[in-house]
Image (cartoon, rainbow, N blue to C red; front, side):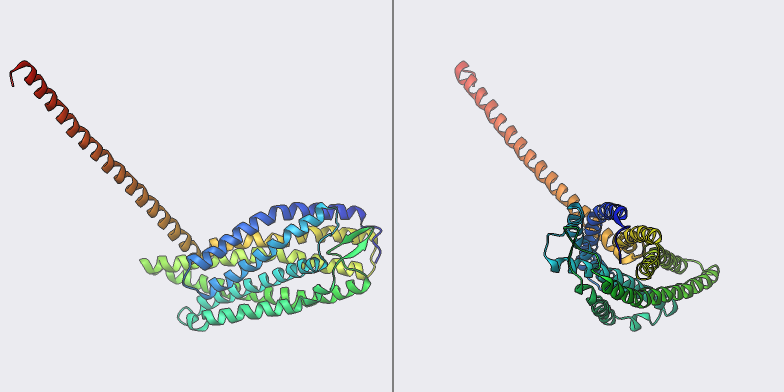
Length: 359
């Protein structure tokens, strides 16, 4: 492959990645670290959904930790002066995060489907133990299929040590094959599964909403809350797929066809720019997932509310104790002052009486 037409696009690519990662890194690290704290410390009862979300937050947090190395690379003008294995690890972590995120979101969709269609039996079907095994399987599957990305490290081009770039035509062909493995098992099958789950969920919720018109009281309100929570999860997961994952996989496939097929330089350069933009969108997935935990996770919000209530109660108790101790000290001081003043007055009277002879 010739790189003669990619000079201007490299400037665009590096600037786009630098701006995106500068924004994503602090937000993703802060939000996902906070989410992990909530899941692991504030939610003692582990549900299948919280287990999946914990693993999703862990994946996003690990990916965010690799972004400073990418930023250092772009700040140095696309020169990698760190160890070669770290370059390989950064590439590996990107794809590990991308496809574990997709599969964890798919798992959440399946859990929501079971909760809606099998409200009486879903707890027996989806247990925390099974959810943990599913997460372990996802990590092993995605990690195993991403191992080939560890084979491509740094290379020297134009006097600079490059990272995140294929070495030669053989590398491009290997990526071309891996792309369709990822598109098929990491995107298409999960996306079809999610659409099927949410189609069934929406049909069931629509039928439930019609029957609820005949109900009154707390049962109707409880079912209404569950319906809104399910619809929020539906909307957020589908929006995440349409915004972060679908454009990137389409653009990546088109760009690889242009490169491997030897398309015209203008077409290849255009495809590369589109790919850069969609990859930046894919990276923002690690920022959007914490919003999903808060907006669609009732137990997550409840844990935060309970922690805030305990903090306010502790603060009020501390302030009340402080005020009480201050009042007690003030009362004691006044009492001593009064007693001291009384003794001084009597002493003065006695002294005056002794002098005047009237006492």
